[in-house]
Length: 126
Image (cartoon, rainbow, N blue to C red; front, side, top):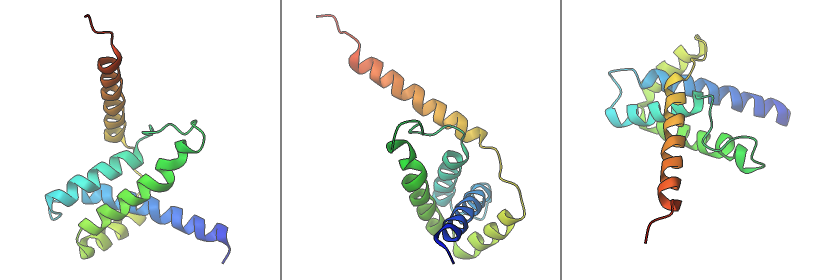
């Protein structure tokens, strides 16, 4: 098996687990803390906007290569194993959802960051 095949299989697994976590975040059988982690990871991974824009050299792909997979690994560990396998099976049969919640979340993060920078660097009267 070539390295390209391994990378492709890994990417398909990440996509499947993202959809599975999206399903887990909506299931009443999943504990609340696992729902919170699964929902946050799925929203971020499915969002069309990244925390670190991809056009920034090297660092722009850091979230895609490190942050998302680590978040997925954490969230998968929090969801009970039997349920996670059920969600993975369901995820292979459905299309990737569009992350509207993730879009809203990332826009809110960028707005909060801009407001924090404005507050920090706004000239203060003496």
